[in-house]
Length: 116
Image (tube, rainbow, N blue to C red; front, side, top):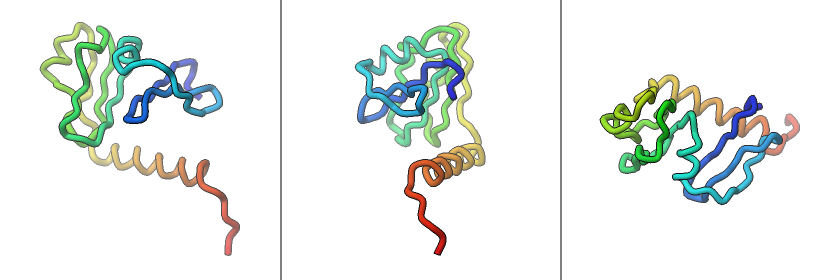
């Protein structure tokens, strides 16, 4: 449940919208359009050269970086009025997020095999 929020995911394959049925539908929105609509932006790009285009982040947004890399230019993001920025989550938090992701995959997306 996403409590009425519109949840988008942007990656190399395109832009996707999380539906009420917990499926991702491909949508025809650019990264710029999604960021300009977003109140909360979470970056998790596993690449040390990628940066969030801060000129597309709207004032008053919350921006959280969960990547092990600096995906956000801190000097630029704090200049946007009202932006709340979490520079980087701790390694334990990231590990728990990864653990939860694996549990979701094992519990809901892999075929169930009967016990041997």
